[in-house]
Image (cartoon, rainbow over all chains, first blue to last red; front, side, top):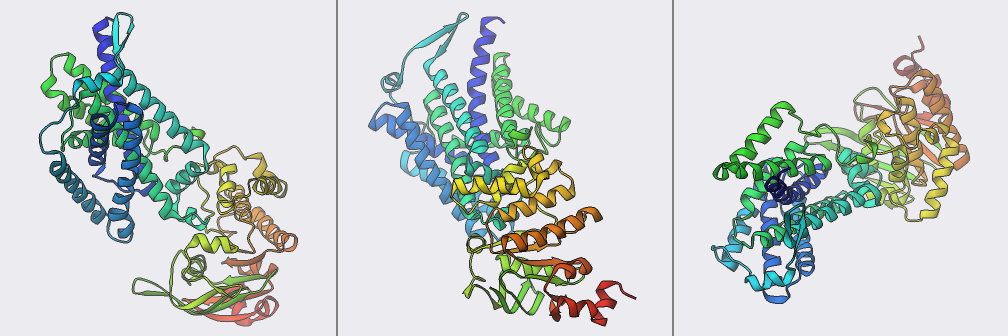
Length: 300
Length: 236
């Protein structure tokens, strides 16, 4: 493979892994609650700003920024779950949907109030302090930030896989996704599990926010819009209830987008990725891994 | 130990249960009989806290449970075998058993009980690594009963355990219910359409009709009741 293609391949993977993380969040939440949240992109944005403040003001550490974003977005996720779903359990689905849209608008405006509408950046000196080296593979330089984004994403996916397939919480989440009434008849407190699933999904979104924010060093209140939309689409393309599907779809979309830029269509990269998703859905209306219940990866 | 007093349950404006009162005593098998849509499943869901009664009370060992969340009702010692089995289709058989023990935290005890279930239901052991959805209906019913017993219940509520099973498995299921009752000392509330089978193993029976208890007697008397024979037992 010519080195510029390999270069773009790494870029695409980096971009795609972030979509995958966000899409995993959607899938976690939809798989468990059978409901869509439209505030996920804004949870991602809030995670990004959390990382921004930590690195800018407190200490230039990726780990610290990620931990802070994890805690903050888990709590934010629980608040969204309470407001949009918990208190509206018996309301029509559209009501919950509208509330999540309302929360997303509220969060964007809140961010504008706190950080202003313009794009903020971390001073480059501070970014360099996070880690400043490159690795050369076959004539291609992979930067520290790319390694960090890919590494954190892969690590989180492994942790998620472990939690879902090897822990009691994961087993209960899978059981709830398959038959919540039967789970509740087993004595499962479904409200707690809904909250846990929402918190986990939101944490994945928050981490993605920190990664993207630092990677491009751009933080702005509407940064969650297109990412949220694309990640939701990735989750649909993946089959909406399949965790592996979300990962594969996210990576594919990142690659398609990056290569469309490479071949001169940078203004149309969103068009390319959405056309790609529409094509997949035309061919496989249930999504890539459609029809399979959430994360029954063990039995595959 | 289980006592329902004048329970009224509604789905929206529709009344599904009218002044239902029944009791189950320790170590007893009681059957709740009736045709389709007479309120059998609603009675069960009401006991389990999956639907809430509008009036009346449900007590378990003298403690009122009709306002408790399902999780607390299971913890109190009532375990369900749900209608149509309702296993978790994409969990393994083994994981389904573990879900039955969800409210317990004694890892060691859970492990011994899994072994006990394997001894009690050999077919469950054979299939323990398979996804539940790959089992036949009869096998699934065995798993459903084992799953319920994993909670170490004092009362087992079974909703139509014979539904959709081959006659061979129907016999087997009823044999096992008797065995569970005899050997584990678990009381059983058996919700059934198959009145013949249910009365053959029960001590007492209640008959539900459009949400009301219309008959209550010992199993022996019910079998000889002309009304029962005509309506439910298929005796000419």
